Image 1 (tube, rainbow, N blue to C red):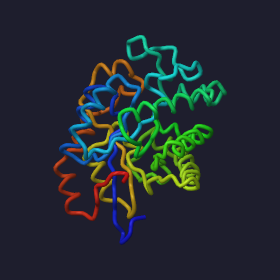
Image 2: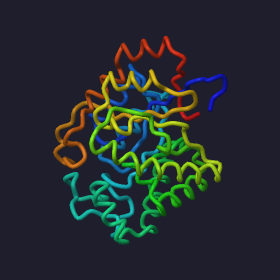
Image 3: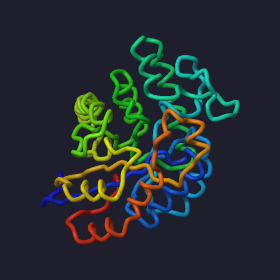
Image 4: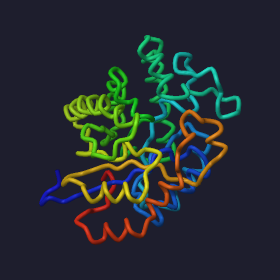
Length: 287
C-alpha cells in the first residue's frame, strides 16, 4: 500500500495488436484519456503496427499480454492448437476461447511443456522490440490456473518481469451474469497466485477493477470504480478500440457483444478526467 493513503491507479488497455482498429482506439485512449499502460499481443494480426505506432507514445507503458487463447501460435505444438484457423489465413491458431482451453486443460490434453515453449517464444519475441517487460498478464486470466501459474512465475523470474496481474482483490461492480459468478473462482485463484508471486519477489497490484465490466465498461462504471478506489495500488482493465466488424466476425465467441467504442468513450470522458483532477488519485504505470 502506498504511503499516506495515496490512491494510485494504472489503467491498462488489453489486446494491443489484435487489429488496426483496436490499436488506434488504444492509442487514442492514451493520448486523450486515462489509459497509462497497454498489454501487447505479440501473436496477433496487427502486432507489427502496434509496435511501430507505440514509438510515437513514449509515455504509454507497454507490457506483454501473454497469448494463451485467441491468437496465433508461435511454436505450433499440437496440444495448444485449435483446429480452426479462425483469423482467415493459413497460420496456426491457439485454442479459440477459455471454454475450449479449459475443456482440454481439465481432461489432461494440454501439455504444459507446450505452453512453456509458447510463452517463452512470446517473451523472446517481445524482447526483440523492447528492452524489457515491465508487466505481464494473460488472455482471459488463464495464467492463474494451477500448473500454468508455475510456468508464468518461472519465466517472470528468468526474464526479470517485475509485475504480474492477479485479481485477488476484485473491486465491486454491478452484478452481471455470468461474469460476477466467474469472478468467484478467479478471485480464489488470484489469491493463491499473488502469494506465490510474493514469495518469489514478483509484485502484483493491491486491487483489480474491470473484471465484471470487461467488454462493456462505460463512463458511469468507470467513475464508480474511481470514486470507490481504495488506498494503495489498483489496476483497472479496459478494452478500448474503434468498432471492428471483421474482428467481431472472425471471433464471434469472444467479441460478439463487445463495446470497444463505449470503453474508448469512457477512457476519454471529460467527466472522468475532471473527477481525477479533483481527487486524491494518481494515474500511474507499473513503475
